Amino acid sequence: MAIDATQFKQAMRLWASGVTVLTTHSTQHGLQGMTVSAFSSVSAEPPLVLCCLNGETETSAGIDLSACFGVNILSEAQQGVSNQFAGGSSYEARFAANPWHTAVTGAPLLTESLMSLDCTVVEKVRAGSHWILIGEVQHCEMREGNPLLYFNANYRELAPLA
Picture 1 (cartoon, rainbow, N blue to C red):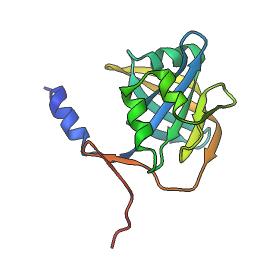
Picture 2: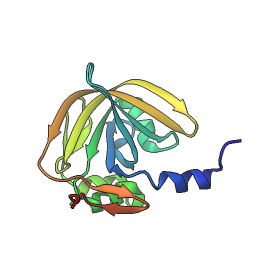
Picture 3: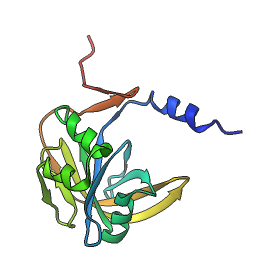
Picture 4: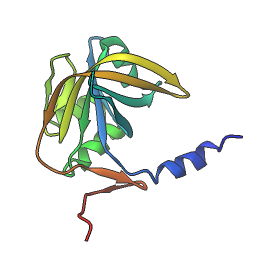
């Protein structure tokens, strides 16, 4: 018998990861974006990444319509950006408060992110309450800095081992 959702969430809090904001734009829904915790590279040839997001979100619906998305890996200076895109404000307010630009696919990319990927959807798989999106990277932007990390329900920063 599988563990319950509460126990699963407690266990997943112990997985340290970078903080990712997924963004998109569609004519029906406009600018959209949300903080997601599940992101990974899949393949270098072709360049593929995956993101997982709740299938009931407006951002998911927007990606369905646009067939593109931006992956924005946040820097250690962007804790506020993560909080905004995690839900505390409207989509309009999220983008008004953070510099962004339109990428090749039409997806919005957050200008000050540590790294941004402009992706087209190549596959979408339903898994429980979420969609696994596989995107082919069309464009990449990288900046100097350190990533924002998330572990055990708190933001963290990189520190060298002694």
